[in-house]
Length: 605
Figure (tube, rainbow, N blue to C red):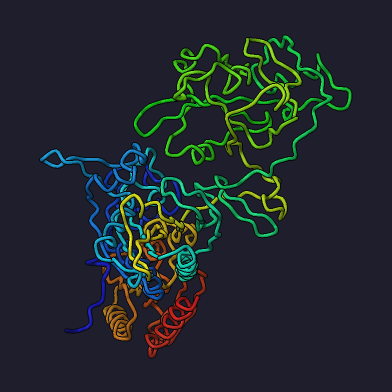
């Protein structure tokens, strides 16, 4: 069979000159305009030939690095039965994010958001001895999550491709080794993709487990906010812990006093009123002297709803993502007018600890009824005195002391993290940045093994519960991140290792010899193992061809045209914009050498 070159005249692609109306970010706009993907429904996309070529190369890099560490590939169905997810409680814990359906017999199924249960059951079915361990399995599979707000194209979709890997070990020491091995493979994957990543401490969320880290690609369009310090601390804001101040000796503090504070339902108006009518001798009152009590509703996976009051210093806001991480699997929502009607003791704008948690109405023996649950920010320590609501309109209490005058049901990390806050490990002030989550690694431990009965016999013939790790990479999200980080105003600009083609050969003009020379160079390159896209369209202007080439983003472009008369063709490098002439004779060999060197360099990253 002869050499086959992909030609623009027959390639299944239609480029667009204008940004699609639904596209929000650059990667989304350009992948649609360049004909890599097409929208099928909100958060769901059809992959076209160019997109599949890039996707396949990213998958190949992921696959190579997984196989390099000894992980073996399997492939599960996306349509799964309910029972394993019932055993792990995730049928309910996933809440509305889970796609649920019934077959014709009325049996419950789901579209898998992740596959911990299925991996666990597979290993349970096939492994019985410690000699079968350690074991690492992975798959590259389509996942489904019913996102409430799909956005940014492939960054947050309802259907997406993910690589998930799982390690199975006999004890925690072996798990720690497996975790570090997978972690190192992830660093190599992202380096080979040309993506900068910051590894941050993270919350495990619905996945469960102990140690958890995210691989975040710094980007202004990222949904995740993370922090880092000069001393090397890095964490997702959801995982940041607050350095707890020492308690204060309040033995000499004056008794708390209530004062009328008309028209002070906000922190700003309260502070202004306090400074005008109840000034301090040592300094001005500030928002940090007030205790703000924020009412939220927690919606459980089964739909039940309960109120929670979160107390934070008045100069802080409640961060809903941090709150959500702290209360998972429940989802926090704003308290409604109906919620307040059911709890008349909560006077909006003037809520204080006196009617909350252990300070309010006693609960029943089973823990139900009574006062609304009350959780405090870690900064609210014993002995600290606060201005806070007195639970009646236009009234506040001054000098209410934690530990003397009120208590709480517990502590919660829900207040916003701000630039300049101290790092929990003492390594300096925090700075904030945004990032795209590309990977997440967990030490799951025995959560799923215990729920599903995964045990093996150890060297003494005794039954041992297997300990597990879980390791995920968002493959389609990684593709979008590469597009987002490498594009320019003209279009995409793929790194050579993931580009749909290595070289874009363009024939310009109308002369037959131009097209003959371009075709010959394209065939020569293909014969040398270089992937070529040849723009052979005879009735398309050079300007349109150049615009398409820049939009498609192939790393190298060879322009065959006017220079042919003097024995040269033009070589353009997409990323750098560099241009130069090379002799027609030997052009294929020279460009092939350049591409091969670039591919080798990318592989060694």
